[in-house]
Length: 96
Picture 1 (cartoon, rainbow, N blue to C red):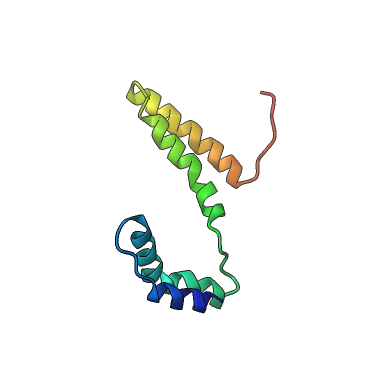
Picture 2: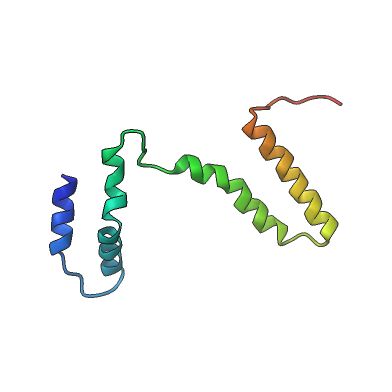
């Protein structure tokens, strides 16, 4: 079915605009788009990777609003500690 889709796509002619951009993109990425069908270890979604980098992107956006170098350093340390705890599955509250 996927091969039939690409055959149809290759015969498709879009004059211009977003549809043409999408068709050209799909055709240029055919090998990569089909790779998941050849290797059962590959998934069709990259949600895990997207979720892993989301805190970094949010942190990067928040750093723009740091008013001093000390504030930016404190934000970086806090995000580092939080993300390290997540990676190591530390999800407990401790009373100091």
